[in-house]
Length: 147
Length: 144
Image 1: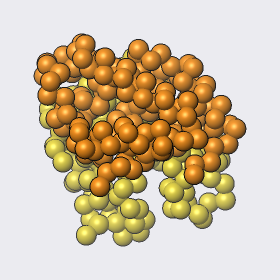
Image 2: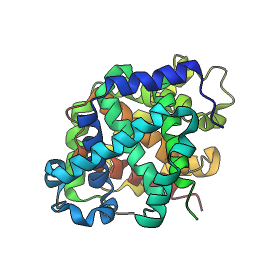
Image 3: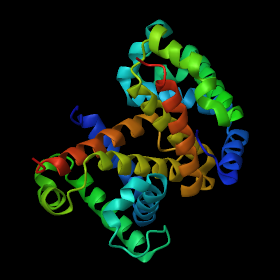
């Protein structure tokens, strides 16, 4: 069972209240597709991913970025049961989407960088550490149903 | 993995020119941040009294690291040769598990993202990520 301190809970709530979902979701996903181009293998139906500009302008990427962030918000709203909350999502990624779970870390690294840009100096080491813990729990939960 | 293209090198050099002047604070922030966010990295510094971000040793070591990274930018055309003595230091004396190079690189990128939200575009991000991975590879050269 993941134990969250009061500071950690309020920090995560704070981060999610401050970030613009329409900016962060699309930016993180497009950054992942640009910085780690092999992740594009999962988005064959998304059309033009030919270069960075195309990826950043691609409406399907942007829409899916928002979907991903909504998923993270679900974890934020269920911090004491992220594993259970994500059980179906984990099965989906493993059995249907067939995503290599090592890719989750690539996306969360990009998320940290994008949130850092959004929050600027407010993204202190302490805030960063809490966010990193949250993302690690999310990733572990998404990995849980892989066999 | 992949080697640096001419465009990657241009992007790294151009972006680093913008960083110039802020290197010390970036180095100190990235290093101290790493010790906080990835506490397992503290195991390499158990001989230091104070591992908090404000400590003089932590600040100084951050500067040492970023000075080496800045130097690596100037040696970007042959990192293996340019970082030879540093590689020997890390391999025979420090013996830092190379997985930690990635962790430090990530923290550097986070700090660069904070300090340069407009300039740290996805294109610059991928070039810098590749560069830091190449530096890590050069540092690991002598490990075995």
